[in-house]
Image 1 (cartoon, one colour):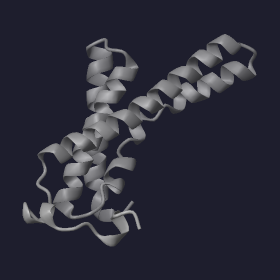
Image 2 (tube, helix red, strand yellow; image 1 turned 180 degrees about the vertical axis):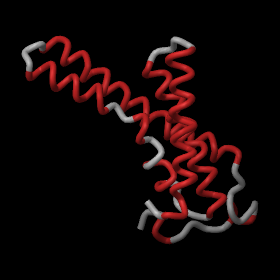
Image 3 (tube, one colour; image 1 turned 120 degrees about the horizontal axis):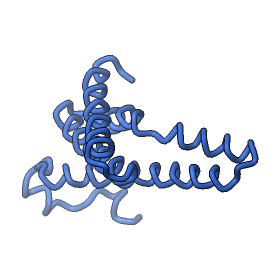
Amino acid sequence: QERSTVLLVTLNGGVAWTVYGAMHFAGDISPVASTAVAAGLVGLFGQLLSRIQFASALPYVTAAIGPLLPGSATYYGLLGIVQGDVNTGLSSLSTAIALAMAIAIGVNLGGETARLFLRVPGGPEAATRRAAKRTRGF
């Protein structure tokens, strides 16, 4: 992570964790739905921050999803399998998979939502210009 993005990414991850905590613990909403909404905000803010900074959204998003990653669910799932409690272990691993999918879906939907409201660089004349040779299929 570059030094110039650390503060913004930390704030983005903090917002995600706060939203998750408020929805899951205070609002009694499922962890998967809470994670999806929080990841959507990460994608939204990551895309907006990248446009403001004229940079890629990747560093603003990948580091900010860290607080949402399903590390403990994966750990407890594998621990349950190793200790012989296969049903509990597989249940925890399926929760980890659902959380990972919620992160992926949320980040993508958040990024696409941000793109709905952002101007396309180049204005209307860019839409009538021919595509670059590499995007025309040959």
